[in-house]
Image (cartoon, rainbow, N blue to C red; front, side):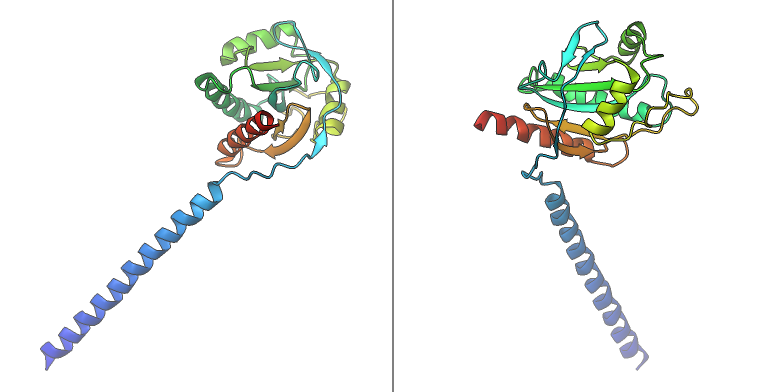
Length: 222
């Protein structure tokens, strides 16, 4: 009798374990399918706003304007070289993006990175050149621009719809200026097509790169 009870108990345990195994397998399959669905890049990239005209100096002393960027897909960011808050993580993601451009011939000459310094008082042309060299920034792929602080802040807040700390000057590396860490995807007509936070949201850099590729396809088809 005891053996019969033990046998039933074992079969019941096996049944429970089997059910749990199938349940876990089903959950795993659903997770994989859901993950694939989440990572499918959206082809819907609506126009968010139009970037106003600007003309600023880059780290090599050249002029970069909305007109010189026309026809190129580019990613805009606002940061500064002494920032110790969001900027180091932003720079790391931008360097990853730069490497992607370097390694894909189809992106070279058609996709650029454009950073605007929010601290032009300290980010002199010499400082931007030094920072670019230290970080490994390739000026053929990534422009670091400077101009008057009020003009950059206005461009950031009114043109890109991001926070630039208003008209306040940076209070130093320890405090800095509260500013957005968003990466802004801009099409060849100077229109914003998406906002991303690669330095804060896992997977956002990959989504941004895929969205940029979609815009390049859109331009070819147009």
